[in-house]
Length: 187
View (spheres, rainbow, N blue to C red):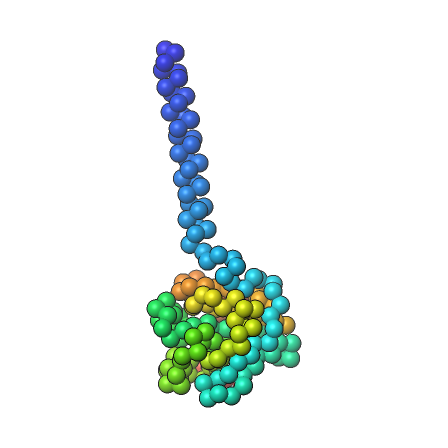
């Protein structure tokens, strides 16, 4: 009888430890599936104006505080396989964005995108092809693809790293306003 009680208590202890390990494993899997926080611009960080050159070699600057719209930055590299997986999601977003509420801007972190590539992927969305090196550091542009929402004053509102899920696309639409016109032209 005494051994049965010891055996039963040992089984309960092992079961409790097993449950705790399963919970810890789930939490660790969730944490490891996310990029390290230092790899993304922290939410709430004040960003400097985004500066660089466009594909034609013209200076390009996105300023904050002068325009009442948010800025949605699409960070990519033509050689990035995950970016290729993300293009269908981004392409669906471009015409649906309310241009009265958000300014979409592409950023090529590799500086290798051609005019044809940009026209094919972005259409009329402006793209910075040579970004100022200080902005690479300030914006934490170490991961591709990234989708970064910056409020009208220049503070990071949200960062989505990696290939967007359908729920991410829905959240972006909710945070930026949906386009009510069918043209989706730039303003």
